[in-house]
Length: 104
Image 1 (cartoon, one colour):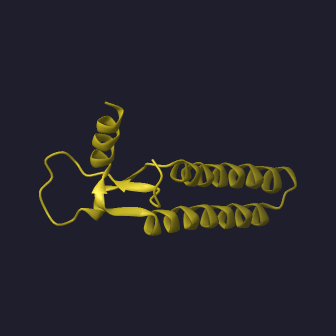
Image 2 (image 1 turned 30 degrees about the vertical axis):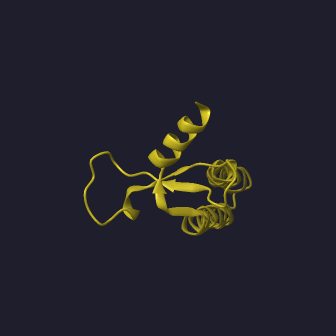
């Protein structure tokens, strides 16, 4: 499945209404999974740096600043990827149905 979208909207079964965009997203490509992993990795590295610099070297303010910088960078990258690489027209259920149809 090669397309330009990394995420698809996750719409609840039986949902009726206009707000299709507030229901979350799920990755449909490896790039989407990499964006999620990058966010988690930024949070973990930020926490580790905060612990090492803040508590071991007794520079807590620097450790907190490093954590905040990495958290903002990871979250910003993830939010950018979701905002620009999400399919506005199809949901994850549509992609799963296409995948099942192509496997038959």
